Amino acid sequence: MALSLIGAGSSIKSITLVAILVGVEQRLAEQHGIDLSLMDERAMSQSRSPFRTIGTLTDYLEALMRGKTA
Image (tube, rainbow, N blue to C red; front, side, top):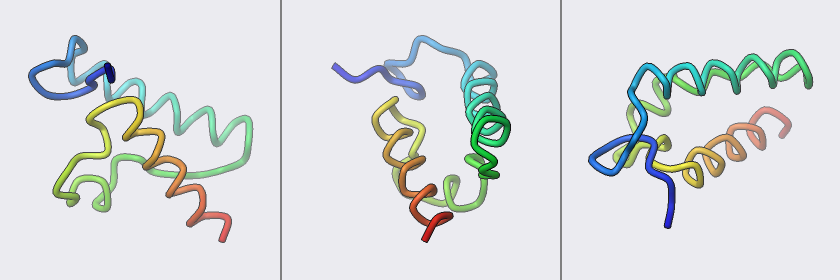
């Protein structure tokens, strides 16, 4: 079962999700020199949020990384 980050099945508050996303962005920048914005128009305009589960967040992050390194 996938851990829900948003929606009815989520056990975390929206502010916690924001803190997680900011933490991921900061860690990528500090440890890998990669500047990404997870909470931008691309993410917010998708018909299915990339923040639904840990898996969808990981998939979205990997897609952004491929785009940055390509």
